Length: 296
Image (tube, rainbow, N blue to C red; front, side, top):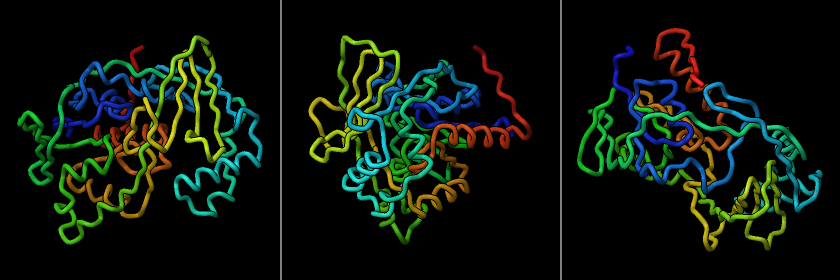
């Protein structure tokens, strides 16, 4: 089975992890090499615990709400702001989950990470995917055949490339199930160097930003509204639903496998869960217990 041709679409964090685990796969990215510094404009990524294939370093993360230590009241106020901005259900505001407690813990040690270099085919913009012929067509009109397709780009884009009617000829209106809202991130430089990550959550409904992160010599301000000098993160905030879960499972019948929260359209999926899904897939593909030996 290992002689099958595997194509990976998207050279973000998930796509690069997939390439590290499947060296024989071909990784395609629509952006140019110079514009693919992973999340450079979106702020630091950090993990709760290290992932073995990534180059992880511990970092202290300080969290505040309105520049003060988080409390039950301020956490609830922040969720109320999110409720109005994201159209959350009222009962989601009242519930204080274990995830909330962990997210707003004042000081905790987490892990920043770098991804080892992998071979990426840049400037490869996909225009269509033929599920039946297992064929990918690129903007330069070249076509590439695959046996297994690994998707790490947003599911809504994949459905547009496939053509939703190919899977659901009688219900093309289901494209409306991909509810989302873009995030706008403004990056500023500062002369103050921060060795630690400082995240300040904002409850003021009149303030367009909901979170400001300071790390090293950068300040990253996030908003759900278009702000001057900001970068648009698409699709941004996503809303999971039963249809997208079924859709991801249906794609497997065509040897198309989705990994990562945007690709599975699962708002709760984190990078650890994605990595576990990838390793499980690789174990199945390799036909046994596959052990990745990370070369540092």
